[in-house]
Length: 458
Image (cartoon, rainbow, N blue to C red):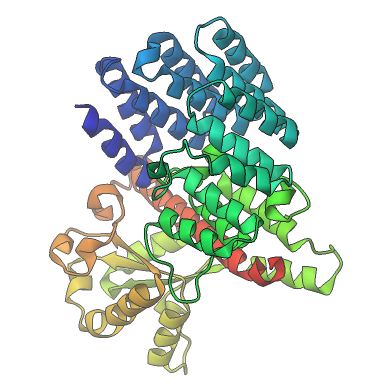
């Protein structure tokens, strides 16, 4: 039964059903015996709570797990997770309480050392944090958490050689440096800092689980991009959870940047601002701010018989349009005298995201099938552009070769028309869809900002 809870919760989280995912994991915690890997459900539930702006509830849950789970059943993993969550939220008081609890237990030096190191990291005392983690490591068997914090803090203290030495101990099993492992990412970053690009490329390749593509190479910015991409609930390796605060000596920015699990886009905006380091009144700074406000271009493909559904969607996105987050294009924007085919083609070529309002008439439309869908699919295959089908009326969408392989909205593919217009039920569904689109827009904006700042950063 245990093997079902985590993947099911992960699928829910990926579908923006955080509350349902957390509820499922809590149910598993109640039903799974402590000796059957229940600790893992505690870790997953606490992380999702943090992403759902429930950090305090996540800490309470982990404290419950610390009381319930014996040491031999991975209680230490629960303690470490609680400490990391405290470090993310800069909760020094909670870390001190955990340290106090662990100090009274036998064989708890690892957790006390990790807690003390994280306390120092919160205050940006990187060298002291490295020495504390390293001292605790020397009195224990190889502890990967302490090992990682030792190397990370030496990097943060501008001492990459000491970080390199920490990660190259002969006692560290080679299997530790594997695909997606935070220590593999850290080792690649350390190699960059000591200017061993060959080793950096090697460990970047291992972390990604593939060979580097032509022209691809390990750089500081590449590793920071991975930290961003692998610091959210959609990633199996949450780098921000283990290394929540990146110091200026690592990033080259003026200030420390921090992982914010409940709203990572804010942290990314802050990262870009610090990366550019542009004067408020400079021309370059002005151009950067103007560029950042460019809206995400959305192309809406639909059958004209479904125009009412298209209008409902447009109305729900009006707020995002007004704030400059999105610019939704549909064929009713073609004016008299315009070359309509070229206008549609240009809109498909320029869009960042395509929405398909799917119905039986949509599936039967020759123009959609012969002109619109092929061009959109080519862009998806060649550029990775996202296409999102929205099921508006009942049809055999799950038999269509193109549509069946895409993640559809609303959740489960329930048609929009089946939601009542009374009591705001249909508006609620449209609002959920709009929220999903806003999240996609923020993610695409973040990638744009990264590309925009890359040359300046280098």
